[in-house]
Length: 490
Image (cartoon, rainbow, N blue to C red; front, side, top):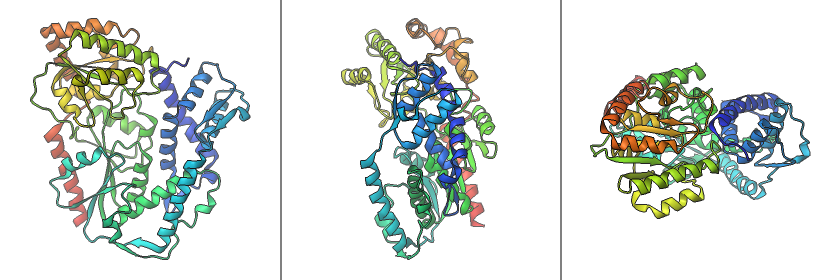
């Protein structure tokens, strides 16, 4: 059985960077990364990273190579993932028969995509869009959850807010701006005969280009910055001399950021604090980084008398055995502190069976992350237990004691995460035996003096992670946006 732990996933992340760079370098001519004046290399990098990081079959193959237990055959998600797997084997000096590396043909999905692709090819020939005279702030809506976040941050501005989203491209507002075109937008696509996934990038480039350009952008904003549509939006911004701005959404548990947060193409990055600024600049030296804090992280005036458990999602970072251990700890806590627990679901709700069972049996303790903000959960809690969520940083900022279980033997962690093992009155990070956390939880729950001592030190040690939050941070963001709008008005 593969050891799905943080150490191995850390090595996986390092390998992904090398493999993707080698794959792109080797196949540069076949990839056709120039399209309509856009350089799509960074877009291609992000798409490949997200595919590999979410592929169980590729991660299993990586683990087997590292443990020298390569199986007779593997089935990968696509043709290009199979080619990348072949490169992985070469890098590690593993001989494997290419015939034993299979891939899914995905005929139905490809047929469905081609039909939609043909529609947009024909549509783009006959029609284009008139530009709106009124300038807009463009918000990339790669995830619907961010719409309410944008609305909160930008409600003071009179400018039109346009939410760029692939799904609402053919909307009533857009149709009103149609005009005849009779020009071929996709004239170069026949050059791409080697990699089907590039047509997905071409299509999304057209949709975002048309959506953004017709709305006369003042600036382009998005959260996270790790998706390939963020790179497309950044390229569109460069072509139109418009700033693309990424707002930090989560923080970094490791010493290094995920591969998808490296070599980014946006102009500005709005960081939570000094630590994020430092590490982001190290891997993105061409980007301007400004510290504004976490504007969407709010504090509420609740009694802090709860113990918060963050449910893990199904992930390559840990196996079912580790999730079962966490489930046992959670069940113990439910029985030990029946009225003091909050069980917060993961936003993606991609749970294993044991977690689903707990959710069904303890509905009165559940807080749905899609309906209730993390700030509300933290404002009710004095302690938070997780298998590896970056919410540790938000918890520390709120004065909530974080307890972490992550199967790991190496020092691969952000220094403040690593220090959870050593510099506090009791050990807050267990990397081997999760059951030791029972004693820690009980001690902190019983001893208010101990609790206060840990909280004071947590706030002090994690101060550099998030300098500001809530209204002060929102004000800094508003000032930043106002400056850009003023400069565009000159």
